[in-house]
Image 1 (tube, rainbow, N blue to C red):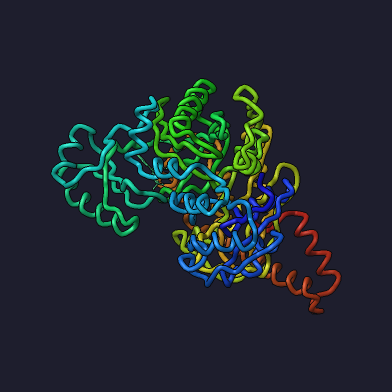
Image 2: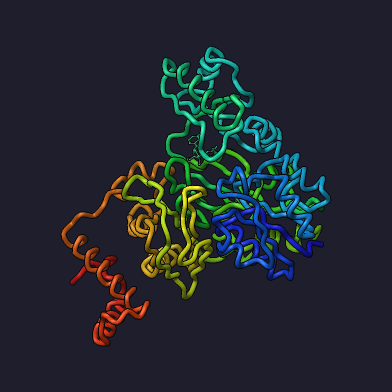
Length: 502
Ligand code: ADP
């Protein structure tokens, strides 16, 4: 039984976990770096402990300190969230060695799946299709050249210890391979402290489709259907949805069964994700993420199953109380990752204080956020501010709902990715569901600013209105009652810069 839980994370996921724990009657313990003293995850928890200065290497990543705080706060368990220490097998082990429950899989599972070549070997042995290529790392450029002839060009060099899209290189021709190999090895060493590199076939326009799995400590494993995550920029996901517009019921069943086999092969416990590349009806294992994923809410909305709640229940030793046959997907869900990045300047990170935040609401809208007005966004952490998630009876309704919700969202003081997401909702290929992981390469117009006269006029007017309204909100008597009426009618008509001025 977990009665008290330390959440070893920050931002939206820490808030999400605290909420789930509170709903279970679990005492919640937050940790924070200096600048996060009054962050939403701290305010949401029952107790909070300082763990160090801003850099995560001196705070959220200091495993010993987190365990020490957990003991001091008399926590029974630690939830790592995602990122930070979530996939460090040594941390999971240290937590258990300290007599605490690690909310996640066994450390051996994390180790097995953390190494891409080992994961590929295990998956191939379990009968799960893998991307054609090697299951051992290659020692030198000569060996890579020989291996690549079998695999077939183009090939993708990958760091065995890789993650987060780093350490990957596409090679089109044999003569480019030796140099790319050396570079990949150097990059892998710098990023992961391990220079092991292997290669696999580079698929030209696959989709990224992943299956959510849930296992307990009693040997039960179910899958909760797929998530479509092809809308990416530099291998980072931007929009996710469930179900995938490309997958048939038969394919879902086949991928789901493969994912369950994958999880069973490592005696999986808790929530995990098996990622696949999908192309023309074929699917290939990519990797398994042994933690809760950023995009888990879309699965929750279509299945009605609370994944974080189940993480806590499984960690407490409970058995799943439903079977595969009980998992039914209903409607369609979409998630947009709202980040502090400026889509019009190549997703450059944006920093500053959130001067104003208006969160969309209404039917079928969910906001998993980690910011509030007055919150300072710095370069110390991941740019993910919040996730806007919608659910509707059909994909068409979900897209319309996301567009509506994005229109309601106001974040000022920093640049965010929201305007990019709003454009995606209108883009015909996205709407038709006909896209692959190359989506952004094929739609560079989504990253260009709209400099039409109408757009500029609308933006100028919107800025002036916002300024006036801020004055009103702060009761600065510079604006009369008639202006207030005028402004509320603007509001009722929707924010003018979204629609243009007529
Ligand atoms: P990481 O662990 O670094 O995130 P992944 O293996 O999960 O790396 O791959 C990240 C992304 O890179 C995928 O979502 C996909 O867009 C692309 N990718 C990976 N492997 C291939 C491949 N063999 N062919 C084409 N694209 C790939």
